[in-house]
Length: 147
Image (cartoon, rainbow, N blue to C red):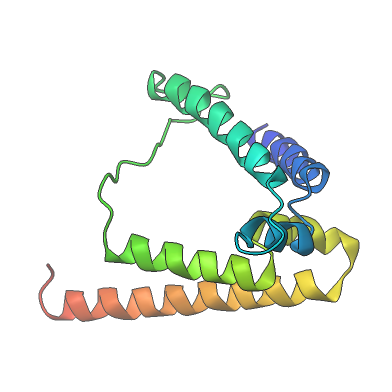
């Protein structure tokens, strides 16, 4: 049942990305172009997502289990550290250069276009490189006796 619900939620999310214009790189770049012909329409999409998120996370914090019975696992980190700042910077630069972020890129794969495919392959390569570096770093820490 959880896999089925994840599929339904992902499908609805993808449709929302398409309807809102988040899968159109030109629209995204227009939103990010504050010095040029700025298109503020995606600010309303983000604002709507924030409003829904505030209420949803507020409800989730009061629950021990999700609606389908799985344990509730919410983020616990509260500090802004170097890794978060650098990751956010890399995300923003990639979003600004390509006009895609992960969700819209995956939804755009259905269009059969070359650009979302190239972006998705580059994203997967970056994720694999990150995982490789993380494992090497963890192995070095463990070899030194932990910490």
